[in-house]
Length: 272
Image 1 (cartoon, helix red, strand yellow):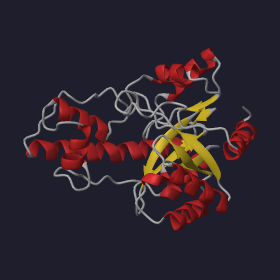
Image 2 (cartoon, rainbow, N blue to C red):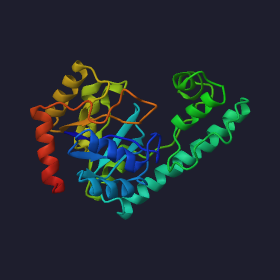
Image 3 (cartoon, rainbow, N blue to C red):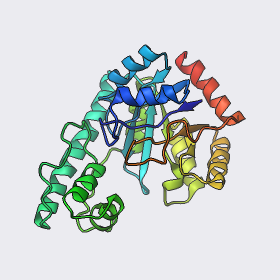
Image 4 (cartoon, one colour):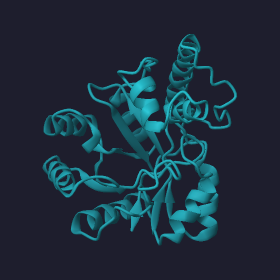
């Protein structure tokens, strides 16, 4: 059983990297990846803990790329010290810091001062951090309200973030010895078949057809599209901890031929 999509306090999860590994081990996983947003800061701690508890683990990061629909790419198994990959992560982080500064100024102009409520210890401060802060400050009733009314694309404080292209992200991960998986494709509001075909041509390795809130129909659809484009089918819970209790590590894994084929290829490629 494997899970290639999870988050820690190094981005917008509620558990530290070592604790996420402990949860994965307790669930009986035999392969795991920590994939914080635009960050690999938690990978060394997680790898150290995984080795201590005997859990095979791959490095990971979830990178958002510029595309005609919201695009998240899971970079898996790369050398995080590779200069090209490290430079790509650093550039993504710069884009996020620039967005965050503009967002805070916009919130201030709207009378929504949340200074002191953002967890600055996180290596990657995401919109989730701002949503939590807005709830704590009483400017939003819950996280969904914060996104819908304030932070989202139609929200009063929405700020567009600059991002690298899919090709830049994919090339950096592959050049560092990793693979790239399309995360939660069922959340992308675009025509699925041409989108998968385009990303396959750019070099993705797999499609996350098994996802914590995917319907049976969506899983079948993206499994079929993965097959049609000679891609592997992967499984990821998108674990965040207390903010997303329905996303349970290992919870969307099922025993089937496609996931067995994927695991066999991961074993071969990364010598697990």
